[in-house]
Image 1 (cartoon, rainbow, N blue to C red):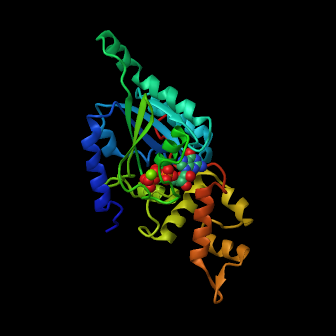
Image 2: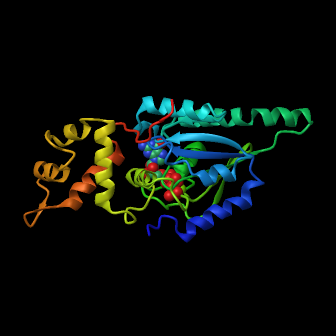
Image 3: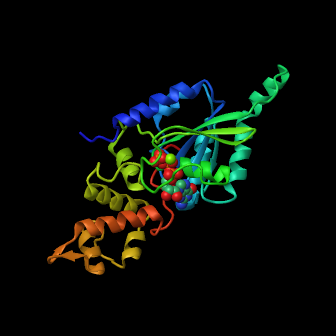
Length: 279
Ligand SMILES: Nc1nc2c(ncn2[C@@H]2O[C@H](COP(=O)(O)OP(=O)(O)OP(=O)(O)O)[C@@H](O)[C@H]2O)c(=O)[nH]1
Ligand SMILES: [Mg+2]
C-alpha cells in the first residue's frame, strides 16, 4: 500500500479545524503545473463556507497558456483566482489586492452594521512543497518561515503578523487519503509534492516521459539530443548520450534523476501537466 498520507499529515489537517472560526479568509495554494491534481478535495469541503482566495504558484515554471485557461476555469465557479511566482517582488501587491477583493463584500456588510474593520486573519493551506512558506516570506518582506525544495518542511502551524491589518497562518502541507486516479499521485510525485521514496522512481519517470511526449512532443528529444524511439527506450538513449553507465550497465537511477530534476527545475521548459477536458 502506497503511504503518502502519514499520521502527521492527518493531524495537520485536523488542526486546521481549530483555527477555522478565527480566520476571515483561507488562501488555497495550487501548483500551476498541476492545478487540478494539487486541489485537495478535502480542503475544498472543509472550507466550503469560508471566503477563499486561490493562488496558483510556480506560474514561472508553468505553461502560461494553460495557466490562463485554469484561472478562467476556476473563476467560472465564482472563485477569485490569481497566478504568481511566489519568489518575485511584484507578487506582494497582486496578492494584497486579491485579498482585499475577496473580503470586499464582507467589509461592506460590516460597515453597514457599524462594525469597524479589524485585522484580517488568513490561513494559508495547500499540498506539500507548493510554496506556502515562500509566499508568506514574500508578503512579510523577510524570512519568517522555513522553506526548502522538498515536501514536509513546515512541521507546525505558525502565526505571522505582517502588520496591524493582516495576520497569516502558515500550515504544514497536506495531501488526502485516497487519490481519484493514479495520475494524481504520479503528477504530484513528478512535481515534488510527494516524498521521493514513496513511489518507484522508474515508475514516476516512465509516466512523466510518456506524458511529456504526448503534451509537448519533441521537448525531451531536444533536451537530450536524441531522435528515434525516445518514448519506448528513453533510458538507453539518455544513458548513451550522457554516458550514464555503471559496470557496463545502464545507470537507470541516474537517468531517472536527471529527467526528474530537469522537469522540476524548469530545464525542459514551461510545462503544465493537467489539462481541462471540458472546455
Ligand atoms: N520557481 C518557483 N519556485 C517556488 C515558488 N514558490 C515556491 N517555490 C520553491 O518551492 C520550494 C518549496 O517552497 P516552500 O515555501 O517551502 O513550500 P511549502 O508549501 O511551505 O512546503 P511545506 O512546508 O513542505 O508544506 C522552495 O524551493 C521554493 O523556493 C514559485 O512561485 N516559483
Ligand atoms: Mg512550508
